[in-house]
Image (cartoon, rainbow, N blue to C red; front, side):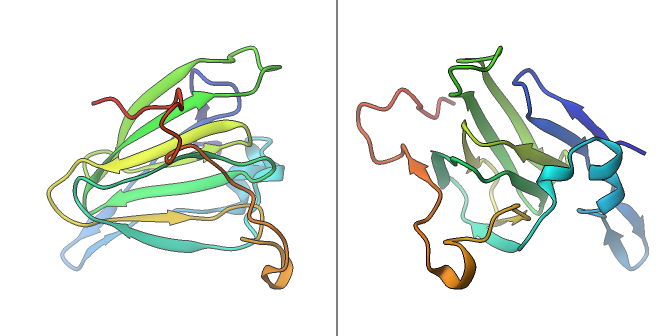
Length: 164
């Protein structure tokens, strides 16, 4: 089974999340090795995971990575507007932009490759959780390397703006 579909930016993949609900609540698979194997996305295998909470109206990013693939799971309990820009000069989709909403109303798993600038904003009315399973360790083994991020959010001349 391959749940991933490539979006309008080459190398960016989305899998629709499926919440299995019953009287106790719900359960959603957010990572399976066979999904990545079957999709030919072996390079995206996670080496760590983290969860972040983002308050309503708050954005994270835009930034990009030189080597890291981000494997995000947007599951709720809020919705996030995701912004993506292809910043890879050798890509056939260079300068392509994509926006989508994922989270409570549309659970999804999003793979973002190196060189794709990305940001997300909590557009709901409650705190929202985002899981990430990147394929690189943050700051390397034992946190002894520089962080793999090119941050655009503090650059007033950045072309990567979050538009509503």
